[in-house]
Length: 221
Image (cartoon, rainbow, N blue to C red; front, side, top):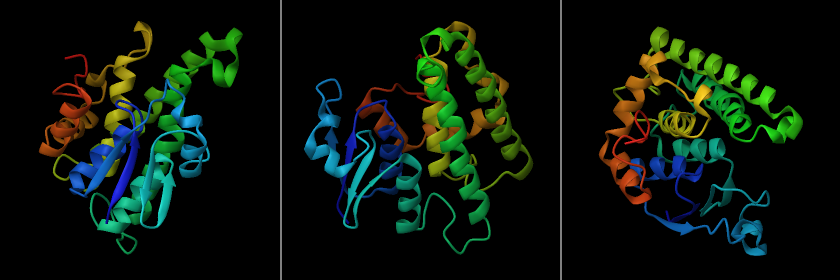
């Protein structure tokens, strides 16, 4: 199976790159010149009509949207998450799409508050996004503490761990000082992310993309 990932370092495509490297799937990286307008080109819009990254070209055709690509990888390989017949599949799907639709979207509202609220309301939108992020990460913290699912754990790498790891990285690095995430408030999340970032596959991606040795738990290093 030959795959091509359309990628820019430290964008959402990095989440997919972590998963591909962990799975050791043969793939090529097509670097996207975002500032040069590559995502608006006709060629790229044939891969992803939305004009965003990530996009993964597969033998089944192109796939876009982060959660969709991650789910496809799980189902193709039987790894990094519960398969269709696993009793824990429903819970895994729920939390994968919660991460995509709730945590990821709240992070985007933090970074680009003018988009949902307009420039005049950006400060209020950013404050609300911060409250949502803390609440939603708190739910993930509680999930790990109470259920300790194998698909989001210190013992097994998973697509959800890598997804949350990249979001947490951005939430530490990008918000203004009052809203920068303190991962010490989420010790179970931190433990899972520390286990993921120390894996050989994660270290290879971090080195290739210049993310530092602890890209999730201490990205400022």
